[in-house]
Image (cartoon, rainbow, N blue to C red; front, side, top):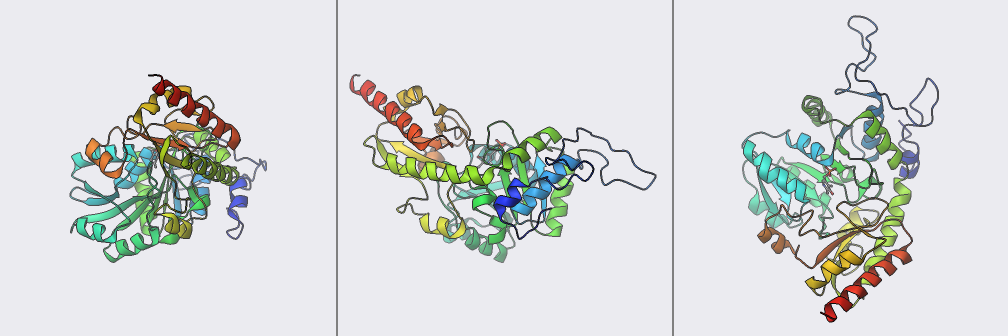
Length: 391
Ligand SMILES: *Cc1c(COP(=O)(O)O)cnc(C)c1O
């Protein structure tokens, strides 16, 4: 792999570019093979069967381990497959503490599937150490953090929570999807496992579904490696290639996502039809200081509430450049309505307790020119205002 001392921009751009010794190909090839010939009995090239190990996937796995400052990386067929593989470290009777404002699919996996296998979860504001202590049980084994959370952008102090977890022999798992290793590296702050929906910023182009796991320490790396191979929700060689191609430009994309999102958030904050803006890069956000301490930048995602729920339908109908679509982290701007889309599987009372209501929109700001994004939002808000006013 590349020199550890190089900057992350260089390591990203060079993913896979020095690993191919036969032809010197600058982009690591797609080894579309599931079986590998053994030189003789008792010998292996290091590759036997592709569920266990495929050369293209191995280059990606080494790259994400390096980028996240971990010891081993594992590429999975989706973010959910990565989370499920990690959850399989645990057994019947175990208990998790989980961030309250959580990706809806993760909540569904925990509540509708893991619960059937006797694994229970408590949902709390993971930045509140007293609340963590309150829900901790003798059988609590891990804490799962999203920071910032999606959609409400609540920020958790990864260092403080990891230290608390270590005191109680709990594993700290961080879903780092929203910031990517370019802006935040939880393992450096004390976490044990990082999980990504690489479908989002790492892939970056809304064209590959993938998940990644990075572990710290030999024991955990071996355990997750065993599960990754045994469960088999692994990433294909072609998708591994596609993901690496996206990751090469991560640094440039994140810089533009960050600056565009902050500019749009500041604009909306002053807009008369906007009631509230949730962006941890705004100084009045409660997570501003922690975010600044533990991450070198901000995600391109933020959410905002309109002053009237009746604006939602016409705004989503009138946006043109910005697509009304369910995902985040790609180069194209996407608008999501969490209460009916990404968070529909979270019960109403939990949604309301955290503030995911029918006036909330989540915006994944793309890398288009920021003036065009703002113009599109302004015309959609104005069209919605006119429609409501005219009844
Ligand atoms: C999208 C997402 C997931 C799920 O990943 P998939 O690749 O869609 O399976 C998990 N966590 C977060 C924070 C996400 O945004």
